Length: 350
Image (cartoon, rainbow, N blue to C red; front, side):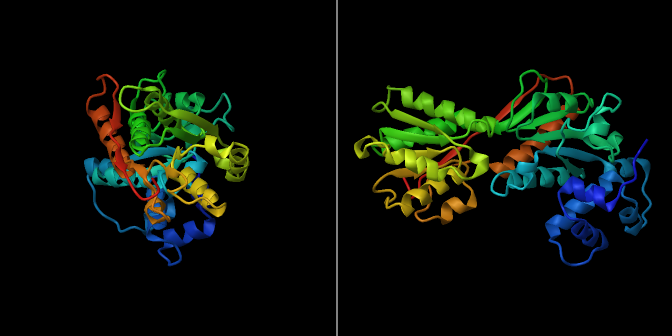
């Protein structure tokens, strides 16, 4: 049985307040256009009565009605939904590409927390949606295998973005993170840095793990440059209070044994570490060089500007929709893994 769609249910799905959703639906000021668009898109997908009644009455034939109401379901965990530097830009690419195909979108954060044996996968994931109009599911970032399995059980095409699951027959879109890791080390080697520290949190995402592997491969390759001594430090990235602990560990290392360069698994880590070192008397890049990965906006505005590896975030979102369209047109073809190339951006920090 379908459930009544309320402003509260829309707010819960979007992670917004009832006030913001109400103003977006009524066309009143007080919310950004981006937020208003998200609310209206989800309201259409969920068949929210008040919004649909408020829209102009138009005569549509059956084909155009189906095209108008079709939507792509976007799955993001709560952390990624509020992360602006990386995932919101990927999401922008997904939404733009979906709009070009006249697909609406709905964003959910699926879990198994409230599921019971009597509930179908669709009821667990998003009970308010008209699943007959869903063209496919875009999964952005990491989810437990049990959640991915539940998504696959809906029978809809599944596209994984920046995540891989070999047990599922689905297409994957990502960046060549091994290439990114190798490029970072090669660049620092060319700058005469042979003792490199790498700061990461492998539990954060598959891309962090892949970057670590690329860094290790380059560090162990003696064919082109002098061998690299690699120091790897794990941090609790999500807690956000790791830099002071790392500084304490660094201070226990004799000065002549400390890394002459650092790589952050992403720009956020690299920027935080650079600020910490600068606050404690380090001159960047004279005392040590620092670089990150992602090329977020803050990386070019830091002092000094951060050397980084550029990742095409919006393009990754576009390619996810292209892969979904291809899967719809050619459902029986072998699954694909698309890896977008990365690009070195040397700046003053390294």
